[in-house]
Image (tube, rainbow, N blue to C red; front, side):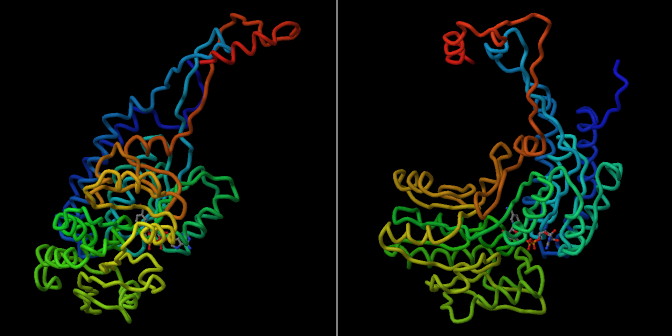
Length: 446
Ligand code: NAD
């Protein structure tokens, strides 16, 4: 038996820790939901749907499959290495730094943590300072579950984040804005630290003339106004065919009323904006626009009504920046070439949604445009299945996670060839007439 020190926790230890985490989250679920209500006015149902139960599902899936993911995989051997056994070993990176945002402050902190721990890394985690109540519960839970040397929660804002970035890490996982994501990438580059950047952007939602308009309106209203529009994959704006725009807008307004009633301010199923800064940013977007629905607000309670904006200019602020709030611009298009021009005006988005009953059209959108992920005839739900990768492309991010993708993200795949003393003379000089043989062997290499 080797006397070398064990640097990383065994798979059995990791499974035990994840089970302990699951139990603790279940015990404190009510507290988590209360914290989310304080930070974001989240209704308990939404907190469970998008935060606590989501995380518990991720934990169950990881606990169930971790042994299978972590076991060294034997792969078919190469003729050139014969006789040998060839493997891929999954190795923890080491010390991982995780920065989380405020909009789904529990889910977006815990989901990457699960992957990092499952892969055997130690973690320093910084929840968002803008959701302090949730941050405090996260710290309480993780302190109860993990040894502080293995998982450490540090609370603080950008100053602390910058200090942390001065240290050397083996992996950095960041969720937040594209602007800060670029700073993270630069800081990581100094030490060649690998990163996952889960960023944002303007996610388009296309409504084709063939779409089932009532269904489209309901699903878009839900995807846009859940969490008061503060969702990284929320439809940012709708591009609707001119011929169905009026009908679609009417259905959309009805759907909003069905979801939140005539006065959403008094509806406990509708949340609030995270803080004054974001409130003012969002109100600023409404200046000079034509509002088809909503538009009312209350700075004291940080309330902004679900708002529909009619055909704003593509140069306006609301069509230039990621909205990240309950404002939905509706832009009409007549020809597909106009649609193409608008889509190509923007950086690659984190999500894209298409409502259409026309396979040729939906396939053309999927195949011709780069975006993180999306849905045909729905919004947001591509996040639900933890066997689907989640992540952006270009300006909306680097890397992917959820389920096994998280485990892979936080693991280095190590190639190992195991040989015995049996010899294969091919590679050794004198080479003489081996040229033909090497060509042949490379042809049948695997
Ligand atoms: P943010 O970039 O302001 O903050 C995210 C994290 O970075 C926080 O922990 C914050 O403290 C830290 N931070 C802030 N300034 C920093 C700095 N200068 N250096 C290092 N770290 C710093 O983002 P946010 O406002 O919390 O989130 C909103 C954005 O995040 C939106 O663009 C949204 O689309 C995106 N987002 C993406 C995802 C995703 O999964 N891709 C999820 C949620 C939010």
